[in-house]
Length: 113
Ligand SMILES: [Zn+2]
Ligand SMILES: [Zn+2]
Image (cartoon, rainbow, N blue to C red):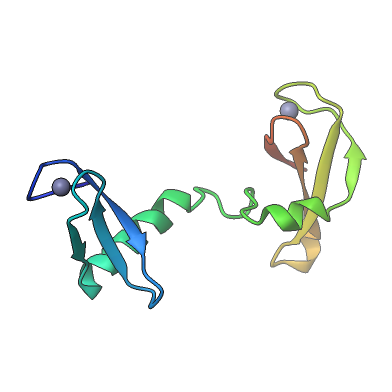
């Protein structure tokens, strides 16, 4: 969080047409163009925030979820009876694939063994 050197109000990052990020004061319109290094830092912080702890069990792409097949299965968390499912091929052929479910209501994700 940055504060305006002029009036101490919170400065908000805004994207310019060129793709640069400018911090702008909401109060007096004072603005600072971020240097590339700090832009990267902003980006990284955002990415870390959105990185799931377990990549295999959480889907980030909501569009992909929309197209997934729905099955009637009981959510272990909220007991809703509809969930989408998808398969993940495991490395070893002997183990076959693992099925993951995601509750349509509370978005709880679990795997089937
Ligand atoms: Zn200001
Ligand atoms: Zn649920």
